[in-house]
Length: 150
Image (cartoon, rainbow, N blue to C red; front, side, top):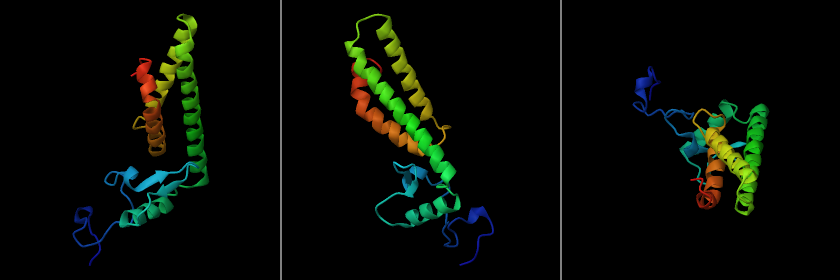
């Protein structure tokens, strides 16, 4: 085995990368973010991918306290948005037609728009947000459809 002398030699000499390459290795395949906003390698089976994920987390400092705190703030904001939207959805069927119902519907639409923006590719901490938002939308999706939001 010899060392790489160019990037074109990927896997030509049997050498395997130690770290994940975010443009080649989809992060959601190898890492996840837990409820405390800490990045972990995907479980359960220990594989070469898990080793690379673990090394990437360490080398890139993905669990530095500042990052964990920021992810936690984003998580709290998303969860608060879920609660507010669920409240709007519970209220809508019981409100009489008129300005209050219209305002509640508009508020719910605004929150849905915010969720879509939080799930956009340029949004920070997207790996964590995608899972949270997708699980939430799967849970409330039938209610959204019933109320005419889908």
